[in-house]
Image (cartoon, rainbow, N blue to C red; front, side, top):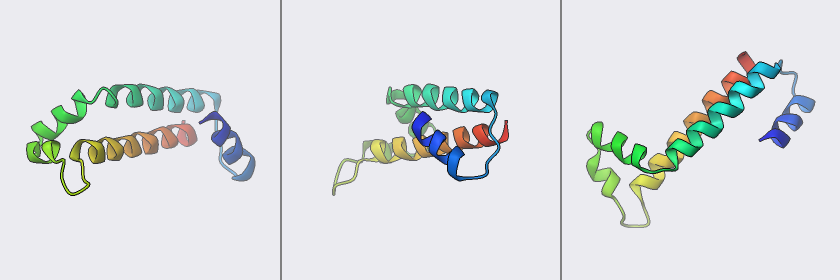
Length: 86
C-alpha cells in the first residue's frame, strides 16, 4: 500500500497528511486482519438474515468469499477516505 500511495501522491494532486496516512494504513491493517478470521463474516451474514448465503458453495460461488471481498473493498474505501481527508 505504501508504494501505491507514493505513486498516487506523485501523480494526483491530493492533499495527504502523515496523520491521515497512519490512520488509513492502521484501519486497513486492522480490518483486514479482523475480516480474515472468517467468523466475523459468518456472524454478520447470520445476523442480517443471510445464513443461506453464508452456506452457499455451489455453481462456482462461495457466499463467505464474496462477502469477505465486499467487506475488504468497503474497508479500503474507508482507508482511502481517511488518507485523503484527515
